[in-house]
Length: 119
Length: 110
Image (cartoon, rainbow over all chains, first blue to last red; front, side, top):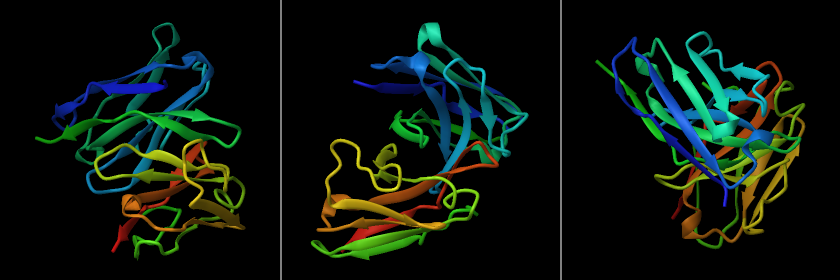
């Protein structure tokens, strides 16, 4: 069974940093591109970042470029999101999602982890 | 404000057929396939339709998708109370190298 389990969420002050993790199981992690998608309270979904299977292709949404850094450890079946210079508007539930198919859809999602940026 | 537009709400009675529209542009829906996600209250999104009109295993055939030009739609026939959820369309955005999501449509079953 494919599972994605996020961790690392919590309360952080504006300007602070946080590192999210996503533990993957039930599939061959090192053959899939994985993503972070976030959802602000009461709002819609926003794609944040993606990293290819070997980590050689990385992309970011403009809203986080230069502040967030995505990485992965294929030996540990894990995905990470290092978030720095956090802003109030980064407050959201952060989901990791597996990307698949030639049409680039997200077929499995984690349960999400909540980041609250507040003073 | 999303570059892909959905109506914020939709509603129907049990057994009815409802459709949810999704409008984009040439750089997203116009040149890439559309996927739909269902988000039940308090849960993570779930893939509902991929590649415009394909259903993952386990998704009832009451759900169907279509695309024409820079627009797409999700149809739900035989509406059931458990279909009450938020529905998001998404398409790859060429300039982003990532997907853009519609703003979401909250479906209410009356």
